[in-house]
Length: 335
Image 1 (spheres, rainbow, N blue to C red):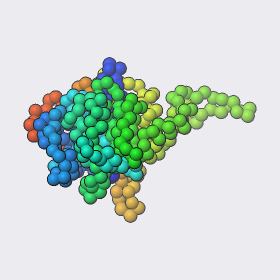
Image 2 (spheres, rainbow, N blue to C red; image 1 turned 90 degrees about the vertical axis):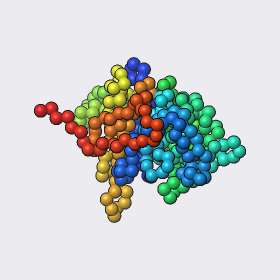
Image 3 (cartoon, rainbow, N blue to C red; image 1 turned 60 degrees about the vertical axis):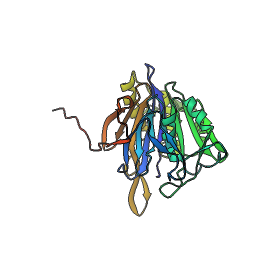
Image 4 (cartoon, helix red, strand yellow; image 1 turned 120 degrees about the vertical axis):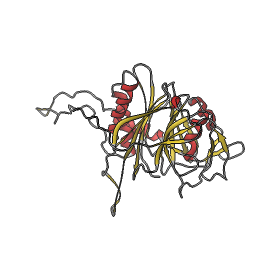
């Protein structure tokens, strides 16, 4: 389960609060579905059910899930209280079992998103829960799963959870941007390298007696932002997009604009190859956006750019169920 990803919290001009992410991974979405997990569902906290505890889901939630285990691995989701969350790859930095001890609940990192969405209503409750949770180093699909997390709610606050060597860090009132390794504090400091970047037109200037005019039609806005797909570069681009991009007027406008904003970090098929000897590429397999107020999960895939949606409050199933991704392109023919 090697995957990249970039996450963003945002809001709209009429006060709606959004959380979205790109889901970047090698391969395809054949092992993924949209999961709907009902209140009362008994979920295990360990990848191997006999090792952990079983807890009862208190809040229904929906989101993108990886199948193949008794409990879906929720890579993102939103619950019936408007709490939204996502996990992102955190290779080389994630450390587990740093909070092991009496009174701690052992939770597999792959299940933390599902656990917190199933138990909490707000980011405050997430923070309180994390004081009593130990993320375990138990293998999943044959190896450890290094991840970190972002959560948001109707207040608009975006909080982060990072399992580091010196313990589980919880960051409150963050910039609302997350990528991959290294840790959030490093990314935040790295933004200082780009303090001269802005979105303003750059007029001609005199240099050594000659007038210089910028090339092309860019006029200088955003000049200096990194253009590659590494985690540090994506974090910087997404931070500037969040700062400068025009907010949506309402929820639908905001979701559409968020999907457009993620174009700044969208990874096209073919640009990042897994191995020189065979055809396998990392790409953005799905882009999602969630709205805390409407409890709605929106998503689009590269093979079907139409935005699809699932509202938590309209779900009535009493058992775990899955929705197909409808990957075939849906085209609105005009004539």
